[in-house]
Image (cartoon, rainbow, N blue to C red; front, side):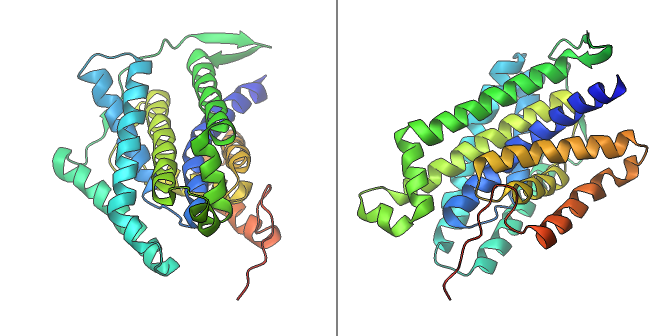
Length: 291
C-alpha cells in the first residue's frame, strides 16, 4: 500500500502549492500582474508562525491565524507601496518591480536575523494512522483538513460576499466596475490581503510539515506554485487548487520512483509541456486580445 501513502504525501504537498497558487491566480485575475514577491510572503508566514509557536508558546491554530492576519497586512502594504503606482505602467515594469520586492523581502529578513535555518517546533501530534495497510501520519491528514477548510472559505468569500462580487466584477471589467460605484483600489487591496493570508497559512503548514525554514525558502515553492497556477489556468481559482494538487502528486510520484533529484525539474517540465500543448491551462479559457 505504498502508493496510498505516496498519494497522501503528494496531496499534502500539493495543497501547500495550491494555497500559494491561489494568491498568484487571484492577483493575476484582477490586475494581470504576476506577483513574484508572493513566495516571500509565504516565507514570512512561516517565520511569523515559528516565532508565535517558539517564542510566545502558542498552539498551531492561534499561530496560523496570527500569521494569516500579519501576512494579509504585509500583502496590502506591498500592493499600496510597490504596485499601485504601476497600474498603468507596462507589464515588464510591474514584473521587474515584483522581482525587486521579492529580493528586498528576502534580504531584509537575512539582514535582521541572518541566513541560518530554523527548526520548527513540533506543535501537532504526529501519530501514524493505518488506512488500508498504509501508514499515514496524522499531520498529513490535519494539514489536508486545514487547506480544504481554507479553500472552501475562499470559495464562499468569492461567490457569496459583497467583496467577492466586487472582485469578480473588477476582474471582468475594472472600468465598468468603477462606473457602477465599486471602489477598485480597495477591491485590489482586498485581493492582495486574501491571497497573502493564504500564503501565510501555507508557510505555517509547510513549517509544521517539513520542520525546516530559512529566508530563501520561498523561491522554489513560489515558482512551483506559479507553475501550478499556469497548469490550472491562471486567473481560475478552481484551476489553482487542481494545479497545485496535480503538481504535488507528480513530484511525489517522481520521488517514489527513485528519481528524487528530478522532482524539482518535474514541475518545470510540466510548465513547458502545458505552455506548448495547452497554454490556457486546464480550466483557462482562450481569450482573444484586441491589438
